[in-house]
Amino acid sequence: MIQKYIEEGFDFVLVDLKKEPLKSFKQLITIVKSSDVVSCWMYHSNFIGYIVNKFAKCKKLIWNIRNTDISRKKNSRSMFFCNYFCKKWSKNVDLITYNGEVSYQEHLIYGYTNKNYVILNNGCDTDLFNAKFCNDSLIREELNIPADKKIVLSVGRYNVLKDIPNFIYALALLSVFVSLKTNIRLIKTNTDVEIK
Image (cartoon, rainbow, N blue to C red; front, side, top):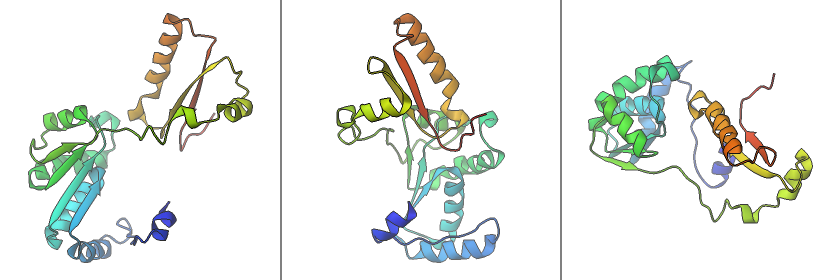
């Protein structure tokens, strides 16, 4: 994916914060000093971006929050640590984007500021991703799914926060109530999953 952006003229600088934290911070400060906007993606990046920007003094700092469940039991210790400080620093950020109203409300309850935010709902361009442009006969043939069966497709990374068991349970309920039990085939695609 990085190669695609390089071909389009974007520059990338790889820093290794774990192995060389001081050198990495110096690199980041140098880069950010010459930038107009720093846009950080998720809690670790928001945390690091805030600290770097304190030294670099970039004009605008934007945090992107694409998470709704910020409970301790479903997130890593390091994420919880970063999020603890981010909520305190949130009032000093120029803009925070949330992936939905529920995400915004959860972070507000947790202690994030209610100022300088915008909600950018998750979604996709239905003109580009539309079933009418898809030839499902290839998928049906490859997976041996008869033409009279309905396909439910779910695409996304495998993560406890995605609550995939609940999705499967909801599909099972639907099949019972709508009598579709024998007419549905579920295709679930994920990354980083080992089938055992």
